[in-house]
Length: 179
Image (tube, helix red, strand yellow):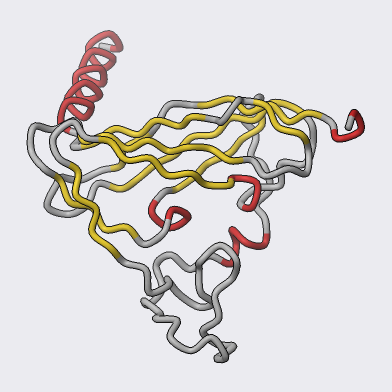
């Protein structure tokens, strides 16, 4: 019975991988960073289908769910910036830079909702697009040690259902005292 359940789960996983319209890969820069520096990763999204796909891009911090854990699997604390993201809020167009209710922060997200950036990204069959994001503004990664980063993105309606998950990338944070 257990062997049959395991077999069915493997078939479902293979089916999901075959039917995902795109894949995600996390590239952790050079892999090691000094505590306090920006911790930039590159997210590579590749159309693995034989047809063109269209994705809506609202800004990387809302397009992807970025998960960071310590090497032992425990969660890394979120920053105030991550807690303040409103990725599912109303679309806000930042047309007046003097309007404090619509001001955007240095990362492009507006207070109270998604910024006016909303563009279509077309990926031809087997084409890729890369985006660089700073995970250090999302999670408190100042403590030296090993961290694991993984990225997820929802499959848009019209392309299927579910969530595509990336590889797990290891990031090493080094002590700043050696500077």
